Image 1: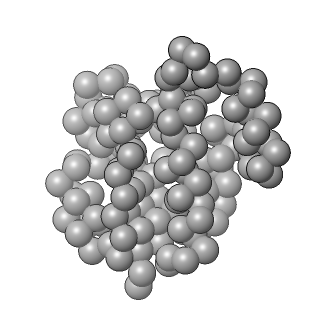
Image 2: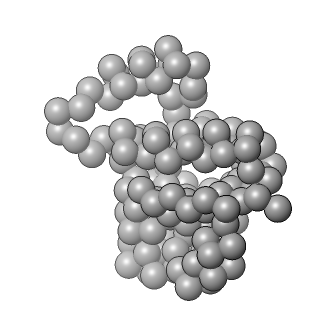
Length: 136
């Protein structure tokens, strides 16, 4: 089985589009795509954190969303996450240490999240066995 493993560390809209796009593209090539959200990105898997925010002060959310829409992609992060899960190939995990540090509990997770796991588990069970590993 060919798999793709991705670790994402940032949660800002303008910084998360690329790894989510690669995850979506990965569903056309790989049998399974596993994503571990570490640091601030663990908030992406929470009901509150999946709301859009920008990381760069000079970035224009409206312009970015307009260009994302022109590219034929959903502009809402939660819609992107739902589209990923709808493929049936994507698994989204929150890092247990990041969840503890950034205050994300299992009860806070969006339904599309596959739970909170330790980084060692992800590295040994998903990343080490993956055909391709990416980190953002």
